[in-house]
Image (cartoon, rainbow, N blue to C red; front, side, top):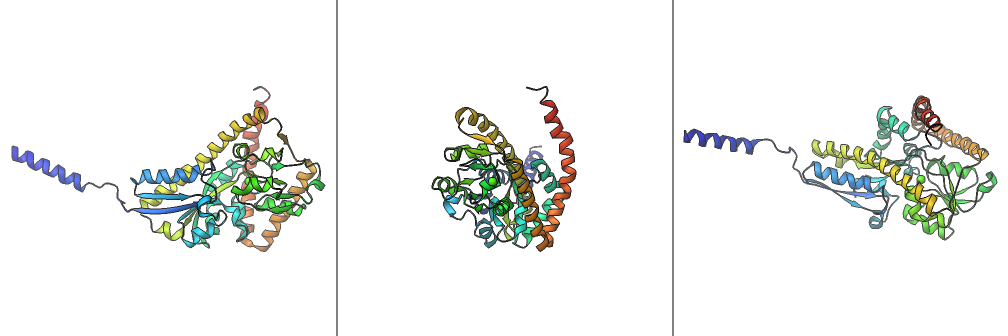
Amino acid sequence: MKRIGTIAIALAVCMLVAAPTFAAETKVRWNMAMTWNSTLTPFVNAPMKVAQLVSDMTGGNFVIKIDGAEKHKAPLEILDMVKGGQFEMGHSASYYWKGKDAVTTIFTTVPFGMNADEQNAWLYYGGGMQLMQKCYDKFGMYAFPGGNTGVQMGGWFRKEIKSLDDLKGLKMRIPGVAGEVFAKLGVNVTNIAPGELYTSLDRGVIDALEWVGPGMDIKMGFHKIAPYYYTGWHEPATDLQFLVNKKAFDSLPPEYKAALKVAMQIAATDMHYENFAMSADAWVTMKTEFPSIKVVTFPEPVLQAMKKATDEVLGEYAAKDPFFKEVMDSQQAFMKKARAWTKISEQYYLQESEKVVK
Ligand code: CA
């Protein structure tokens, strides 16, 4: 009896030892570079959440170290650094690569384009992710959504924009297609790294800038110099981006690949909610603590000129590049049906409920 008991215990110990634990126990150490300084919440919370989740899901075996722009000093060169393999991953925004390939810009957002719900539906269920991947194949990397800001505010201006004439000669920081739109309307457009925005405005290098929305803008202090705060038109659903070096990703154990993909999607979704909450809080603070801020909308003739110039810019790129046209057509076709639903669901709800909910 005693012997049988001993054998049983020995068998159980053998089974425990042989039982499959976590299949991949390979130690992986990656580095991720961000366009943002390490303090720039909520943007930086997305990559930080990815690193935490990936470590948690792999028992601490897959570790991602994150460098902010204050460390690597190359905020607008993330694509090159991930492509070259200095960093296995990056967190940035696709429209910063417009100089390399114009089509990259329209994976971030398009003036007068889709809102965040519509754009996410296009990305995940309307073929958008496949098109984005087709675009990034040539850079030797994978691209994933990295957090959506929702509708961005139109920016901070020192003087009120009363007509198209007020735009002429204005020096403004505004990236992407919107920058080209403003250039067509006579604005001297520039792109400046996020960490240098306040200084550039303060020193008069620029007269106006757009950044994100109240949650991120108020703490930057732009309102102290440029009190006219315009409603949005140019970035209705700005998607940030995770870039992953293809060779590095392909060499990961399958469990790590799955962990990374899940972590990126959770982090991207979470950043969208966090930014929304921060903006809602900041909107209250702004009204009570900074009453000197003047919230304004662009006059309709200015908006009409912006729309016309947007169509021209997109049309010019589409005429030059069939792939740009393919992505643009895909976005516009999806937006057409998505907007019909948005109107009868969200818009109708907001408009009708406001009559009774005070
Ligand atoms: Ca922006």
